[in-house]
Amino acid sequence: MRLPGTAAVATTAVTVAALALTGCGGSDSDAASGASGAELSVSSAYMPQPVSDSMAAGFLTIANEGATKDELTSVTSDAAGSVTVHETVGTSMEEVASLDVPAHGRLVFKSGGNHLMFEKLKRKPMQGEKVTVELHFAESRPVTVEIPVKSATYNPKTGH
Image 1: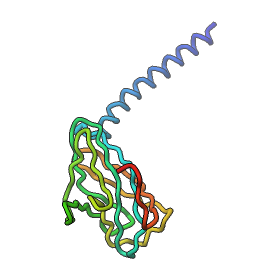
Image 2 (image 1 turned 90 degrees about the horizontal axis):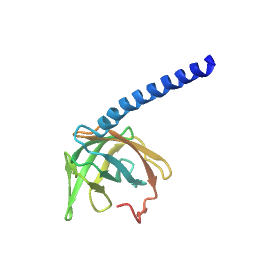
Image 3 (image 1 turned 45 degrees about the vertical axis):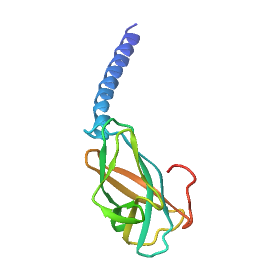
Image 4 (image 1 turned 90 degrees about the vertical axis):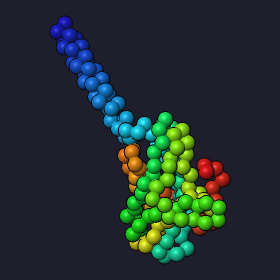
């Protein structure tokens, strides 16, 4: 009868340890969202296969399910010398230092609108490949995204 008692104690110890780790994980999860309370996720990412050997555009949607806004402050990628954020207002586009990701809202990058510009490409990405980027925010931790390279004429039907 000692064996089942020992097994019960071992099971209880494992359960207590698991609960303790889960408690620690909860605070880590909150930190991953950022002190701001933003809850960020990325969808609908794509890059049309570039026509140029030196430049490309990127599109995606950043959703914020949190109660506090955040700001996209920069984007980095090993695929390019620099990645800049461009805002389109009317018919003009300009590079900006940051863009808001509203609380309970979305920041959308789409063809003809806000977009990422990959400049000084290290090599021309081809259809079917993926380009990795890291999105940096004012409050939240960086988010790494793999952007699939689509045909040069790709036009998403949904997601934006």
